[in-house]
Image (cartoon, rainbow, N blue to C red; front, side):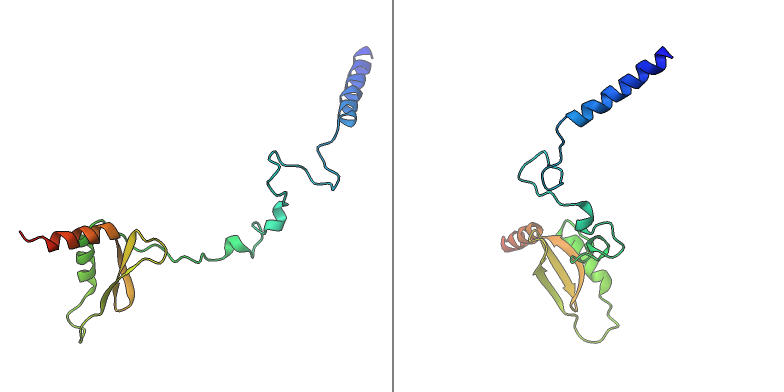
Length: 132
């Protein structure tokens, strides 16, 4: 009986501490962040865990195409896609990647085939400019 009374007093004492302590809830009923300049946004307002929301939409950036490290490797990859049985000349073009200037896109008839580092193209151009 004494053990029960001591346990009951202990439980009420612990519960009393939580009632007497100041709450972490502000006047608006929103918990405060540890950093004052961070906005306090409820998770459900972000819409991340809904079946239809931003997280379930396809990204605006397309899949990264295959990348090679040298001009010669890009040339080999391009030649794999060129077939002599197709009449007419293939339209081969280079353009800076719209997503990353460090990469250059190699296009064949408007389709992206491979990406090569822009620096590799510059180094190849400089090597071709020097005779010998």
